[in-house]
Length: 421
Ligand code: AMP
Ligand code: GLY
Image (spheres, helix red, strand yellow):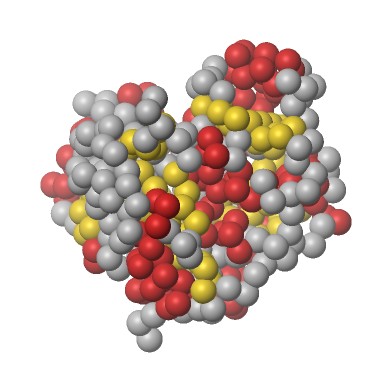
């Protein structure tokens, strides 16, 4: 089969890496791809929002399956576009991708179906939101309704900070239309965890859990990023809590989406807080996490193409999904300055010295002379497998040391939480 993956980051590299191991794959394409993906797939210079060009390409090349990585095109209806042309595509339709695209929609859904989440109110104007804030306990969480590249959430530890976040979203419109509505919600405490699941309507097949590190500096300090590192499994969180989250959050949400006439087909990503009252929903994403995918897929035993096809063909209920026992740790090498402003175009060296890890490229490109250059905030993700988190972590850090580029920055404490008893 010929498969086209839409996207060009570490997540898409990990998806292509897993697909490249399928005996049923004859050719892989990626649009637009990146400098590392080019080793596995033919990269096509079409951007993820160029739906017409993508479908023309898919039809011309007789692509058998399209897999959509990022959130933006899902929210803009890329799956509906391909389906209307009779092209098989893995990912949720626009009316289901709203579970990531609108926090107000999702909070209302969770409330309506009594699915555990932080208590909240939503607002359409600054004055009433600011008035509500005055009476709210601190800390408090402020969320722009729409997609804001992972930056639309502020956990405020003072009323001033909360009001400033509110003003930026609703008055200054720093996230544009995504800030037309805002959610103000209760601050939850506990360990965070991500559970991704393959979902086809009411059928939910959870993946192995993982934990992300969103802040840029050690000790969860500094501004939020797309994710500085991940690990899987999450051994210090009881399986009973994972089971509870699946039973009380993931399955009821999939059912609720069907009941709302918005059946979800694709990867449903639940961001969860393990609170003293049990697991609660922080957010849903309508796609694979980045960099969660870089630890989850290396632990997948089952052929990923079989899973995608089962979802697309309504056969997910018949499929058993198997995982490796080994643990995985992924450490991100980012550009100096990220998540603020950073420069691109620095030469990356040392990749050929990496022996015992998989290097997923997030933001790289090939120069004309063949050298590899930095081309994004997150540049590379180094994933190592080991018999446990400790071994995988040691390997990942030993290998990432070998990679050099100007301004390279990594956290040094990825997965440490899993080792502290
Ligand atoms: P989100 O983009 O919704 O995942 O939020 C980004 C981060 O903000 C999450 O990973 C949490 O660490 C934090 N966060 C979001 N909502 C809450 C909440 N209600 N209570 C505590 N922390 C939260
Ligand atoms: N790593 C967080 C996300 O993919 O949304």
